[in-house]
Amino acid sequence: MAEADTPTLTLPLDRWHRAHGGRMVPFAGYHMPVQYEGIIAEHLWTREHAGLFDVSHMGQLMLTGTGVADALETLLPGDIKGLQPGRIRYSLLLNEAGGIIDDLMVTNVSQGADEAFYMVVNGATKHGDIESLSGRLPSSVSLKHLTDRALLALQGPRACEVIDLLFPGVTEELSFMQGTSREWNGVAVGFGRSGYTGEDGFELSILNSHAERLADSLVEDERVKPIGLGARDSLRLEAGLPLYGHDLDEQTTPVMADLGFAISKRRRTEGGFAGAERILAERETGPVSKRVGFTVDGRQPVREGGRVLDSEGNEVGRVTSGGFSPSLQKPIGMGYVAAALSEPGTRLTLEQRGKLFMAEVAPTPFVPHRYHRKKG
Image (tube, rainbow, N blue to C red; front, side):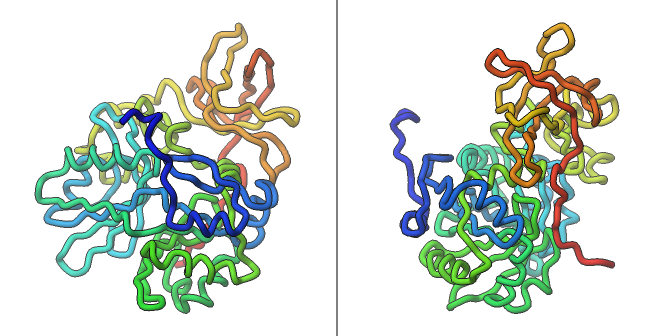
């Protein structure tokens, strides 16, 4: 069947979104809510209270068997063998040339000597990821796509208060990038204290058949409102977080993408992951181009596809994400520029649809992260 003829799928919460006023649009092969009350209102509500996001389009994978961590380290640049049970790591699935197939989160859910790793990958790339993983991991590793589970994200400064009421003890147990599980109404709920907004928050994995009850229980709290894709995008942009297929792709290396932190210290010394020779060489000599954040003079944002020009009008980079920041009340964006232009404060000339804009390279995140990290 041709891709254009592939039917758009529905999420487990499709009926729920429509009942709550969600305006549905196609995204990553699914009907998804782009907004409920309005993108700016939803964005600001999440920054001040708690927003509930349906991210069930993401791929939830479970990898079990013998030597799972060793096998994953051939494909990811993170320290998976050193990841303790209950800990989460952001990492990258790499091709043999060091390009990024996808960015993902991996959690060690092992119990005892039995290795088990839970992985969340992007919705638009999940089937390609599964194919890549299945073809490159040894037969001793079993991969299961958890199609029977929904994934909800509760994000914002009051998210922990809401979770505390429904799941006492979880917020005390978890710090940023830690996971656990609880039973709720007789069904298991998996938790990760992470998210895609820059705010403190939690991602909750639950059986599809119980997702609507959980969503209802969360929005019954007056501190929580459902939030759509529009605000999810503006929140992640303010947080300086890349979006796969826009800011990341298979022609982009972790060093170019300014994701060097995802290459764990031990792996920088040992290598042994896909594309390691190229990636470690780029760490030493610097990439030709680099992902940066920028602010735009005036009020009009420059969107994805805008060109970065040098003083003679030659293209030296591309805008990969751009929009108006509701929190900062000014246009911001991210893109790739020649390495010589990547220092904060560097002035840039951007071109979009024949119109020129002046911009300035800015440090990211644009809005400070407020993740919950335990002291000590």
